[in-house]
Image 1 (cartoon, rainbow, N blue to C red):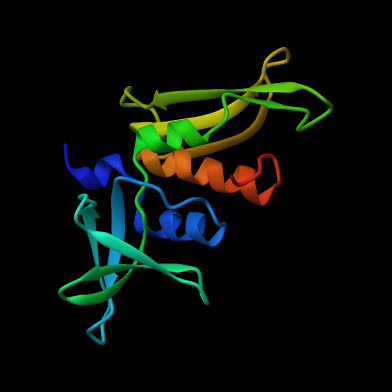
Image 2 (tube, rainbow, N blue to C red):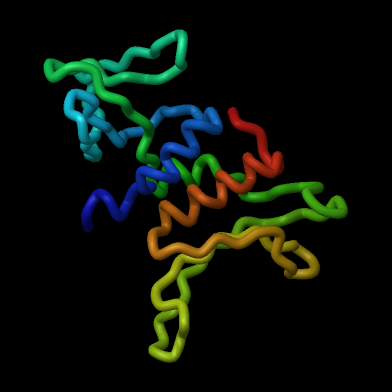
Length: 157
């Protein structure tokens, strides 16, 4: 399985960084800034790679022999699973909402073919608080995390 399938895509990664989600991750999106056309690549962080934070912009930059490059975390499914709360209490009418992850669309007649569904479901009424659909599990999880933060259902830690 390719690494790109197991980590969140670059656009949701950028949004999570903008929302000030901690950038601790095993994988990173890196944009080379030396050329006129930014190049995007995915890297795995090894212990000898060092990062520095620009105190003025709070941007992390990768220090390498090739110069400085803009970076943001490419969270894995496991890392996102640690960030998403299992339960959300009091989001709507004081109810308790439980995290649910499903994959749908294995049948040929399904409109959504092989799509991951991430939602928070009411523990009693089975209504949904919010639902995200995506072909990549990591992206569905990241989009849910973005929704929860933007709607103040959870706090950034």
